Length: 354
Picture 1 (cartoon, helix red, strand yellow):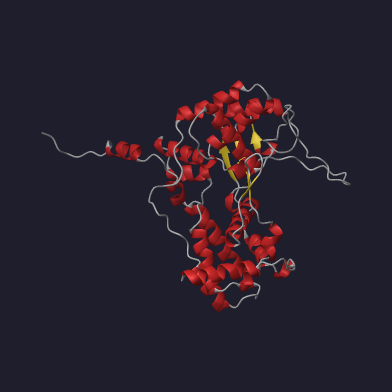
Picture 2 (cartoon, rainbow, N blue to C red):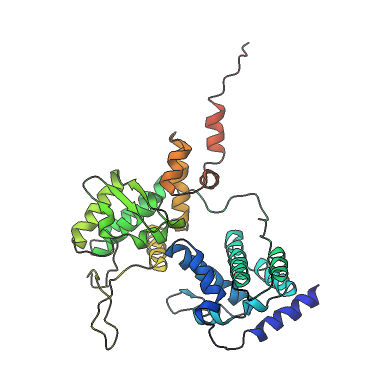
């Protein structure tokens, strides 16, 4: 089996010789992306498939001088790769390579599901026959977690407070912008949702926030209150009320950026907007300054869901706040552990006495 996988991996690299990008009506990657329901889903799956192709082609991980990781596969290469030529042997090699990577089980399965989606689109475009499509997808089974321990962690109140403390010590516009960004993450928004917010989506008078670029293409309304609302109002006093993205880039000199530079030869201005990586960098920088143990933006999402459940908020309401289609997904975000079990045990009455 090892020899076969080695052979098919080498063969996959040969298949990936530079080629022509297929016409739109013959492009299974484009067809798959068009079947996804939101821009955020398409962005996320583009990154996942590029990462998968990097693993398939055994490309190195590229790091910039700032330490940022860059996927060494271009979007054009993703479209040019001959997905319709994959065989079950290729699929076995691909799954083995992805499974052997150091990524989380969730990331591995996102890649595998993305490839399955592309293969299904290739079948719909009649680029691959039904039998081979089914056999390839059957081989590309999802990967089971090696541990029952849930991923991520709970972020303690003191840790969250330390983050806002360091933002408060920064009296530049970046301090206000970062506090607002962290506030949105602390109330459970995904990075992509923070990035996509516009000024028109937020009503500071009521705290109502419309999240339009959510997973699955659904729009949900939540409310910002307490410290999160104060952080947002402080940022708006710095940002101003101009139309555009709610959270904006800020230059080193402290100037908020409403528009990117004009493309050469163009008179059109492009509205400025944060990226997912920039939001991640904000959190990482403030964690370093606060001197606390690292965690991810999604850990803050896990934390708020745990806190809501711990406060007695019913699961359907927590599900609606988080924007999950399935309540079981919301339940999997619970990171209270034994604390919740001990609390539950204390509510159980047993009619025994001595």
